[in-house]
Length: 119
Image 1 (cartoon, helix red, strand yellow):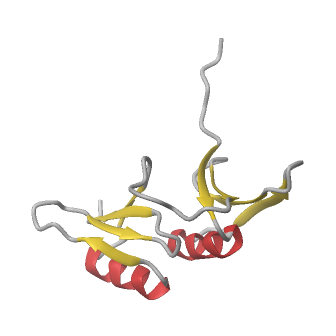
Image 2 (cartoon, rainbow, N blue to C red):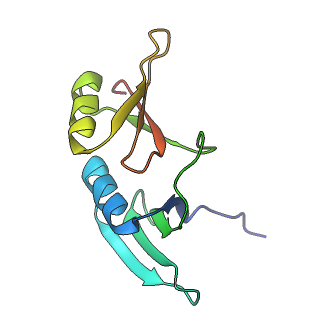
Image 3 (cartoon, rainbow, N blue to C red):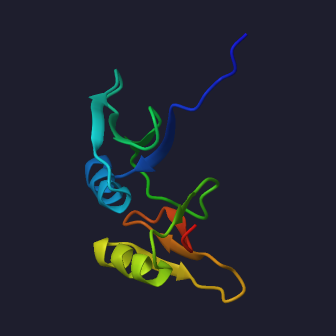
């Protein structure tokens, strides 16, 4: 028996197209597919690593509360500069605890993610 493998990380989005566009710029990637399912739900997938996608699926309700799953990003060369770039794209800083190496941000729809120092 072959083990399961991840194919996508799904993110609920009020506007999948604009959220996918934000994350394409953040991650330096592009849309790899779009489709609508039999129930009329729209999906936009952007490339991550290999064949794994970050998949934005349309939902009617806004993000509420803390995410149960979030992305951790390593800054390319300067953590502070990367945070400033992401804020310029529409993210907002949620927490900069001095005792943690990461800075918590939210994307334009409120989904939390962390930016860590370069690796």
